Length: 188
Image (cartoon, rainbow, N blue to C red; front, side, top):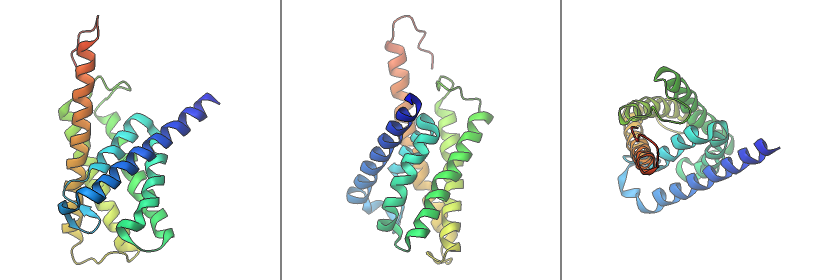
């Protein structure tokens, strides 16, 4: 029962954080848009990746729920399309992230997470996530294929920037906290 309550809390927390970050992006950072729904700096992508890292499957559920709810504001279209997009947009990068954790040998406490690994994770997850999202929306007819490559690359860059920013701040904060702890080496 505790595990379920913890999971619900984690899902709700990341759904809320993602939703607030999305609102900030949507209201304050629209000047950074390449086209509607694709930004050159997409801060919520960093929150999405952080949810995967910290919350695992529960974090995935939280951001997928909020992503499905906010999708109409970004893309328009049918609700069923948004549900499919939430699965592609959240599940694909989640699987890629989980694979990278194994390949890069990142421990569960993130003590082996370095800025170098943050860049690799953000780059690979952003590329795969962006390409899969653009392909999905092209497949369901929500986007034209005229600028598919440009849209995917712009989305990848925006996601990469948002992920790198959020994760770099988290790694910096984690290092700062560890260095301040008594009886630790502080060598993150």
